Amino acid sequence: MMPNKSPEPACPDDVRKMSYADDRLFSDLMTQTGGIGFAECVLYPNVKLGTITKIEAIIPYDNHKTGIERWTVQHDGQDTCSYIVKFIPDGHGGTQFTVQKDDGTIKP
Image 1 (cartoon, rainbow, N blue to C red):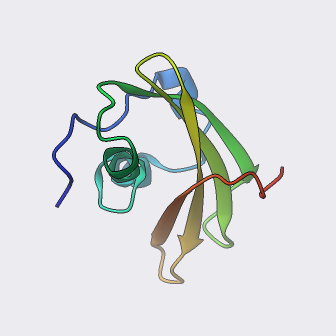
Image 2: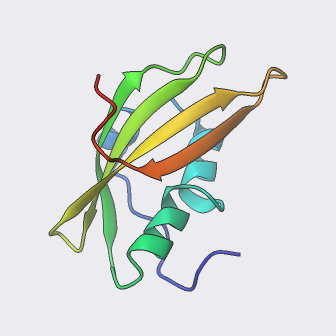
C-alpha cells in the first residue's frame, strides 16, 4: 500500500523520452511499491509537487543485461533528489527494478 501522499511525481514528455523503460515499466516505476513514487512518499512526505527534471542513462537497458539510470526529482520547484534506478531482466521476458537514493558513487 502506498503511503498517504499526493500522486507520483510529474514527468514532462521530453524527460520521459530520456528513459530506456517501456511504457509499462515506466508506469510501474512511477506507481508501484518500491518505485520512484513510493520512494518520494516515504522520503519526502511533505512535498506537494514532485517533478522529474532529468533522466540520465548510465547503462542503457536492453532486456538482456542490467540497465542503470539516474532520475532527478525536483520538490515544490526548489530542492532536488536523485535516485539510481536499476532495470534487471528476469530471464523470462520481464523486468524487475530497484530504486535507491543516489549516493554519488555511480558514474557514467
